[in-house]
Amino acid sequence: MRRNLTKNEIVKRQPEIDRIFKTGKTQSCRGLKLVVSKNDLGLDRIVVIPVRHFGNSVQRNRIRRQIKEIWRKEKPRMIPGYDFAFVVYPGKVLENEIQTKQLISLCEKAGVFLQLEDIPIV
Image (cartoon, rainbow, N blue to C red; front, side, top):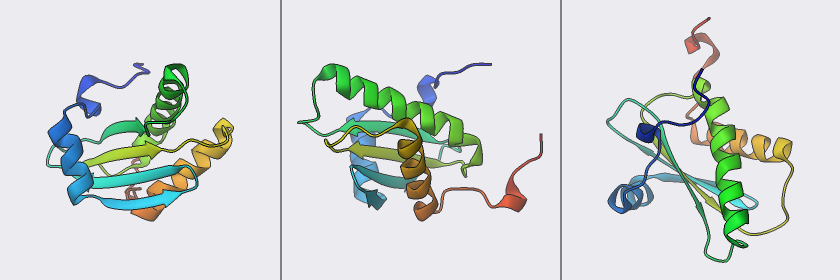
């Protein structure tokens, strides 16, 4: 089973990122902001943006990897067809369990999770 994200699941172009921020709805919690925008592709895509003064490059890349991994694990529960932009702010480094709870609560607030009756049984 493939454990990383495909190229189609990552938003890279600046016009696409700008569209997410213009048309998206925002949810936030301590140290993390989520902007969700509908797309016409039928699949979910993600971009993780640490703010300018977020540590050094090692810390910025680490937080990108951590959030993408949490998102990848939770992706089967999500409604397809959305673009996600996570903006990460500097602060105390949180444990993985706390980051996971934050990300899940932001996605629940945004209303992008499938309802229990919509989840396919595998």
